[in-house]
Length: 577
Ligand code: PEP
Ligand code: MG
Image (tube, rainbow, N blue to C red; front, side, top):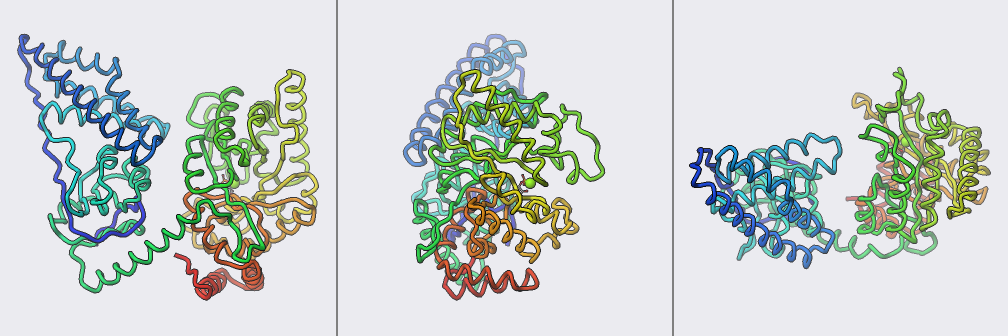
């Protein structure tokens, strides 16, 4: 058994086709002056072939994966057509008298290095696009076949690495799964595999050495493992697992457009997504998110030299609001500090940064930062359904002060004649125990609560969420945490307000029945967790969920609570996978 990174879920069993990478031998000799023309011609021809190959792949991807997934090949074409890049290659050939393959390799490697060293994750990913295009041009220059992933029988591909164009070209009927030596979960190759729903494991290090052509291989894309020529008992076990998994996925897929309601239809909740940038909206919609329960705006402020302008923020918020419309978007105001620092803000060194100058505390000390952000959110609110949420609130005074700044922002916009949603809802995150305890007092000052369990658990149990030595003490199902959550939900309902949850616990399948039974109104989580949580909700009656919540609240320790949930879910024939 080899262990790698689970890149795309699913289980496949089949015969291995091992792709030994072609040796690319770059000709590094100096060329004669009279060969110059011939090298330039070779380059032009290789670029023309690369272009027509990519255009074909793009068309195939548009047909089979949709326009958004095919966009990446539009980006590849742009790299190919970039006059600066092509000029640089030609100048290098002429001034250094080197071969076209050598020049392409040098220029492309230089760009790959520049892009991979950038802080911005998005720019980093562009390095893979340039590498993919560069390799294609070189292969065309050297006469190495570029399109070889079409098969007449079913195979499991074992390769050193696959480019996004390899993945997009895969013939879904005949490629059962793939496994690679290199790669990570967020590479484009992995992203493509997930959207094609081809099981994949990446980062296996030496699979291409250990697997021989024709070996029987099991790829477990859920656990991130592969088995080579497994024993009969393992094969049998995996045949059953595969069948169960296929049935499970089929069921989850059917749920996408169905409401998150209990089987007796007595309780319906909202399932929303947490996002960090406008780019995350796509995944939210694909997984059936009914809104955004937490838009973490800090990413707009990070990896740069100065605060983002009102205009920049407005554009980002408006993009999300418009793309998700008419669904609600909860925009959280700047939550900086703790583990998230801004170098340009001159933040103090602190002994306990998580208990320090962070989030709303910092914003109230620097009201101009908050006002600029609130103006941007208000302006964007004219384009759909936006809500404002303050992070790290510990008591009523902070809400009043933040609302006073919000009022000023509204008055300014009114005076300037700029439209915004006058009735925009304003809520707070409940992530400090004091806030959870006095939720009844705070309920009259807010339109909604959203429980941030990531912090609430760390503060309630005094367990640093970043410290791996005490991670066993970080327990979402701890009775103290459950009681605080229940208190917040009850207090909000009594005041006619609603409560959501946007900490990771909202997407934790072990907590779903308990939270549902306690009356949580909205669950906001990583988009990919939505189908599983929806499935659990739809398999329960509201009565059963309430009974599970009651039981959990009367129990002493997290382990017993977990076992109780396991038993109850098995009893109703909806085991947690
Ligand atoms: C939380 O604390 O639960 C939360 C959602 O906020 P963050 O993880 O951004 O601190
Ligand atoms: Mg938090």
